[in-house]
Length: 77
Image (tube, rainbow, N blue to C red):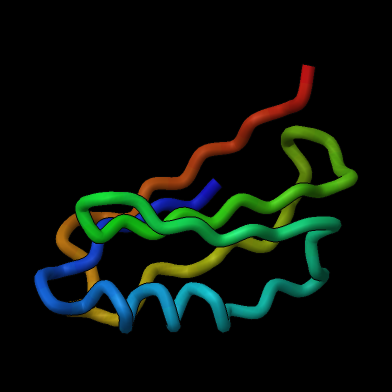
């Protein structure tokens, strides 16, 4: 899971940027969400072990976020 808070006035830029970031290989599933406070969330699903070496969405360009990006991994139970 990747989550970022847009800098003031940059929510549309951050969303557009996040939606176009390629991942290779591609995940089984990928969904993008927005939330109040100009946050953008991307969730990816993989058929891989929890600790597998998988591609990550990088940090956005300088000036597009209000704070550092958060990344978490989860496993289905």
